[in-house]
Length: 400
Image 1: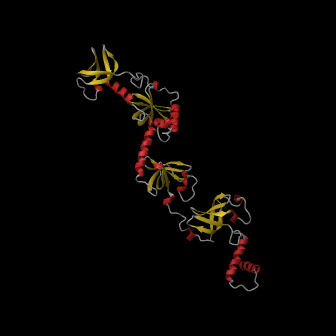
Image 2: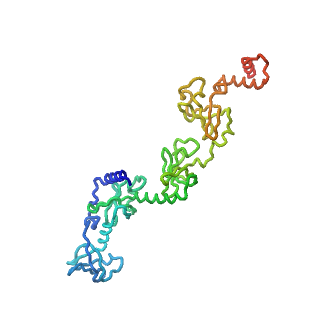
Image 3: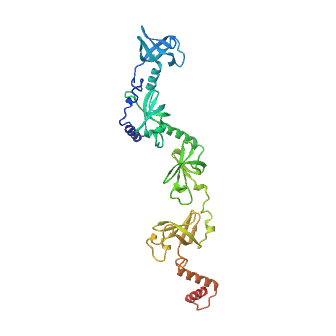
């Protein structure tokens, strides 16, 4: 962890512990985590067993007893154990083997060690926990990798945590469940990466939807990001209108970077591409009707098929000079356009609202020009001296 990350984490812990005294938690408890924190250990030798007690020799002319139930295995005469002094009974010392084990567990704790912590309370800064009888604290930012809105759902649960801070003098024990989850996620990611590569087709489940894309779990603890542009060949403005959390998707892995920490996903790559075969469906100089999807300073994009857009350059939108595209067309407007160039490989279409002679499609000028063209085609050998005006007049009379 970098110095900057260490400082940031320390600031988070300090904010979480602001106003909280870990030594004051459950002060009615005895032992290293409560009121009797830090009692000394005494050594004693087993000299006899008189159920339900074990008779112990603490020192010359000093004896004590300890409940036999404190021992996991039957003690033998001569065995030496560490104990804590729990009290006295008619001048006989009452010792505790469990208390000594709890002290040892406290003394053996180290930063970085993994422990089991039971959640005992929730406050604004995080979770109060017990590790054995030792009191500890998990700052809210260290409870999980993602945000948990209601920490009370973890009450009475036992969590595996990593020791972040330990101050035996102050009885301060700060833990992180997030660090354990991150380590597990890294291990799961490393295992999953062995079977994944760019181009792999996988199943994913949507876990979170953002404005820029959707996060999908592709393996336990392994998530990837499907950018909004990789969801569909059709332009999508809001993924929430098409996806929901928990939905299963068939996806393709597009890229893997940072050792698997960043995985790019795509859905549209598995769907038929509407650009394939576009040149056979729409030849140059053919006319189609489409809808304006975007307006830019340099022209307007028109969708002629779902997922297929072409550009009408500003110079091809109207007769004469046009400086403001939005004054000529609006988003959502249907336009009849002429295809002037098809680049199937480059996924580009050039469109025009003008006919070949420069007249606006659908206008009287375009109709007249079309009539002249048809007349010329029908009269391959035009009589000498018949000018364009005469042809136009004849074409108009034929239409009438």
